[in-house]
Length: 123
Image (tube, rainbow, N blue to C red; front, top):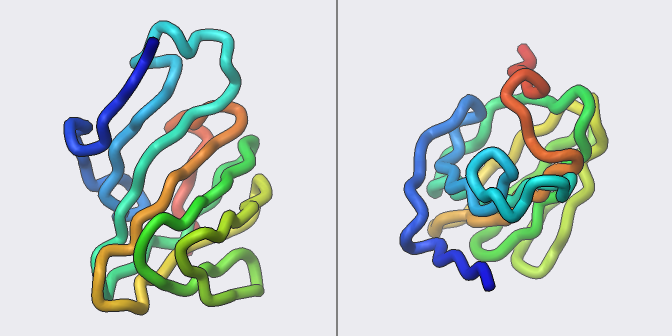
């Protein structure tokens, strides 16, 4: 049985400027080998946003856990809040703004599993 506690997961500031904790990825969890997805927990602090970026071959899902913000995908944007899941198609430029007064936290589910060489910042 695998159980991971987010409170014990080390966080780092990643390319898009979010604070990320990688929960499940075949690169770090041997039991994930052959499972074509990765899951991370991300935080965007109040008043901050991620940088515009895209994944070129993977599809991403954000499941909002806490806080509120505005999601931008391509030319569209919408207010997001806890309980919503957002589909981010491959090759779409995206970023997320925290418009609230508390941390905006969410799960990032990437299919196939996230790879550094698949992600790029967009001007």
